[in-house]
Length: 397
Ligand code: PMP
Ligand code: GLU
Image 1 (spheres, rainbow, N blue to C red):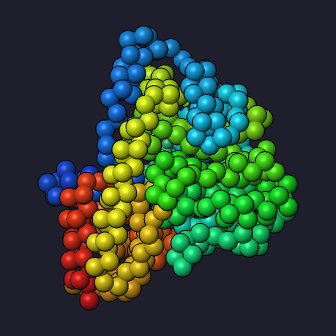
Image 2: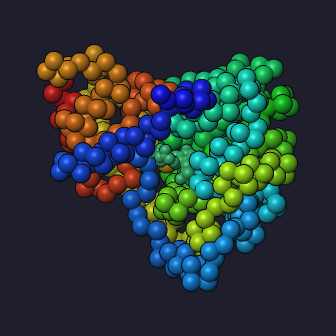
Image 3: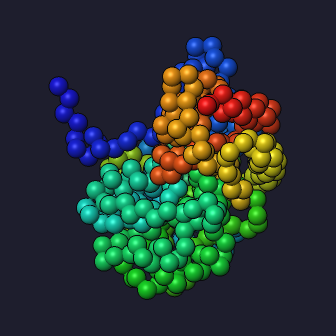
């Protein structure tokens, strides 16, 4: 007899992690699968960062860390905000966690009460809606459409705000769409938030450095709402450090303290040698970040070119991150033998089992007309994967 708590019973497993696993399972059976599901850089962590992690082990950073992270890392993050974003956050306003996912969980659990509403623009990253559910809050989904590069408008946000609204969750550059809010668009959103002093903005900027259109703009730059903004970021994407599990927030002091309290009970603190590696990532030579950006941009151009030759899909060009989110709904309702494709989920399973490419269904991101393709893989893999996708789609009737 199972006795799962109602809180956990209603939680969906991570679809990105699930597709990644399904792809690996098929590969383990000897099938040559190209994995475009999970979003992680395919690069190794740069050597100077790895060396710092190794040195930390030799230097016996093997004892419990302070709950909010080592002081030198919080200082490095504070300096990063000044240097890269011209934002003033003291080290006390920084909390380091085991990945930005952990940071988001801390923030949402610290801020959201039962029945509080959180405005989540869709398509959204899989984890947001689940964390809000975990906090017993209510997701209020507003839909970004492909005609507007999947971005929501200030009017949509304004219309969604009620007396119960506690937070707006923004993600720019976006996972899964790659859309980027420019300064004017953020300013227009700020004008709405200014009018509602109870509403916080949680801004996920983990793809800050994977931006193809120019300088990253943070909603944290607007002083009128800065005391209601929480920035979530981390080293996973910019420095190819997904497995090190280091993320962080910059927040109003009271919220940083609350997250620290929660973290002291849930995690103790983030892994010691990973923190030391993150100090080197942030304070060290930044050329690795630029080099990876060049590769991601080349791959983005490549995949956009290839997708133009796939019939009956619509693609919005990503301005950042490493995903494309094509609209594939013209294939829903088609069949392969006696197998009917009833959803994006079915299409992804079909592409995995018959086309041997792993993608993630749009349902997981709140947009069932699309599917997500990660292009954080080699150029050769991209060429072969889109060929397989095109061939597999052509076999549907
Ligand atoms: N936010 C977004 C939008 C992401 O795509 C990811 C990647 N999984 C995260 C947060 C979490 O990143 P991590 O936990 O690896 O730092
Ligand atoms: N951000 C990545 C993705 O969306 C990693 C997977 C995850 O953390 O869920 O695929």
